[in-house]
Image 1: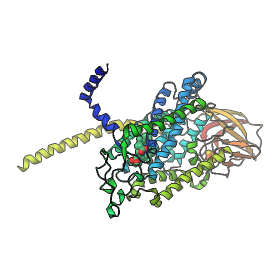
Image 2: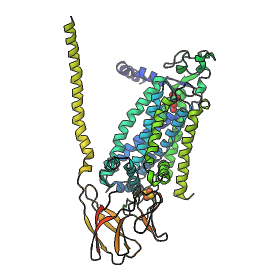
Image 3: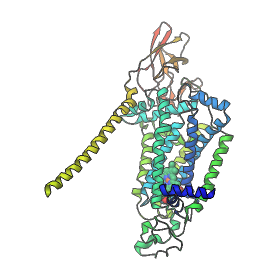
Amino acid sequence: MTRWLGSAYDWIDERAAIRNLLRKGLYEAVPVRGSWFYTLGSATLILIILQLVTGIFLTLLYVPSVKEAWESLNYVKQHDTFGSIVRGIHLWSAYILLFVIGLHMVRTFFSGSYKRPRELNWVTGVILFVLVLGMAITGAFLPWDQAAYWTAVVVTNIPSYTPLIGSFVRALWRGGDAVGPITLVRTFGIHIWLLPVILFPLIGVHLALLRKHGEFGSYVNYRGAYRTRQGVDVPPAPPQRRIEPPYPAAPSEELWAAPLEAEDFYPHQTFKDGVVSAALVLLVFALAVAIGAPLEAAADPSTTSYTPVPEWFYLPLDQLLVLVPRELIPLVLVLPAGGVLLLLALPFIDRGPERNPFERPAVMIPGVFAVLFMLILTLLGSGRLFNL
Amino acid sequence: MALPERRRLSRRQFAVLGTQVAGAIVTLALGIPIIGFLISPLFRKQAFTERRVGDISSVGTDPVKFEVTFPQNAWDVPEVKAAVYVVRIGNTVKVLSNVCTHMQCPVRWENALQKFLCPCHGGLYKRDGSYDGGPPPKPLPEYVHRLDGNILYVTNEFTESI
Ligand code: HEM
Ligand code: FES
């Protein structure tokens, strides 16, 4: 039996070169120190795959129509226990994904991983982040219950404050002046096709770039190796163990130095990746079973008693809507857009070779303030909505 | 020797040009219909519908909520409900929408406050719909309407677009 399998493997390998592919995929060198933090990227990947799988199954039941969207999900809620769990996984994994992608971003920011030659790892990352936010917000429209409907109204109205083309953009998304049947199908199409067909190939690019340059990790893996140019510090002797490409054999060039200690991706890093991802998936599963995904009353555009409460990940923006003076409403578009542009520009602004976060106050301090600003907006927002 | 060399080059240039033209044709043939399809709802003339709201003889100086249904912005079924606030100011009747001019949340009349309150970001409007506080940039929208004695008819169109 095993002999038969072995020769089948040989047969395929001879034609598709999978052995080489596996070897390249699994035996990449990964820096050892701080490697628990390097699990955040793969955790993001696992959660987004969870989204893909549960999302595909949700399309087997969900009806993207203002008449039946709510009805179809209400049917799941009333009569389909496993369907409810799948819905719950899709929701909670989305929430945790947003959290983990944020942590991944913060960690690569702290470690200065975005520096040459990994600028494009960061740039593709920022685009992925925006796309994931887009997935979250378009997904929130789909149940077409009260929460979904009013999210749709407010969110599609925000672009109407774009100077000159505002109402055009709003009408393009809504498929008319008001939120209606076309809004839901368009948003459904964006959520299940348009964004994913950009998102998933871009993850491929992100990972291909990662493999091209190798995991940077953190400055702690390179102590001393970065001072060679000034001749202050002699680079440490090349480590004893075999270092795989793409790191050079000896850390001679400061920007392309190899880590002091590296381990094979498989099984050492995959073990840590697996532990973190499995813990997160278990958490998602537990939340899906224990809390599940809510479904409020069906959308009612004529309500005068319902108080819309925004999704938590969108609270900072909602609080901006409260804080920005009425003469300056376009600021709620300018601030996030400016933030994204700054993020995209980061690797081209902060270009020095220094990776130690404590030696880079010029970026760390604004970065910390930006995170604090988001946190404060979230706190203010939840205080306002839940009378904390 | 110069001549055949230039000929070889122009053959190559021809191929480059041909590839680009073919690419442009495919892009246009795909792009034009898709973009037209995307933006077509913007140019469709919206058909406005007038609906009977009811007898408003009992409405006084406090806004009263009525409900009407209108066709949706695309295919008609199901029709969509809309809230209409009617209030008497002096001897005129104001017919207000409850759509907040900030982000279009559902505004409500708060009797205790004697104001319209928007639950989303705390926008406030006076009883005649004029701005009173918070983020809204404009007063509450007014419906195009018609009074036949005490019977109110409302069209799903605002006097000023929001
Ligand atoms: C769908 C979203 C994403 C996926 C699936 C993903 C996946 C990964 C994986 C598996 C790694 C290697 C392990 C690690 O360092 O954690 C990685 C590295 C990296 N990611 Fe992401 N990522 C995503 C989004 C982002 C975002 C939002 C950013 C930042 C804006 C980002 C920036 C980076 C950078 C700079 C590296 C290189 C880290 C290094 O070499 O030290 N990624 N990503
Ligand atoms: S939507 Fe009414 S105040 Fe913002």
